[in-house]
Image (tube, rainbow, N blue to C red):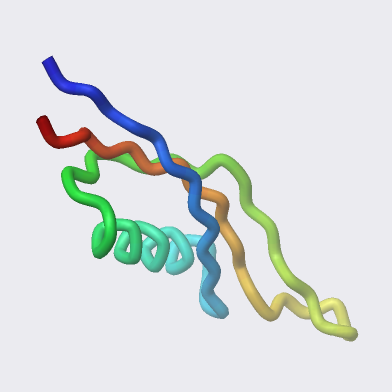
Length: 68
């Protein structure tokens, strides 16, 4: 029997939501062992003074299996 844990992370990218997700998953993979899945819980954008998007942010929940 295995036990899994869920961790919440926030990642950002100046390119896109998709890129922010990739950045977040790649960073989680560096720290967490047995990473199994991730889902986007929330998305937001940061705007400049002209209303232009400067940053895409995602709130991710990642699941990983704990070692025995």
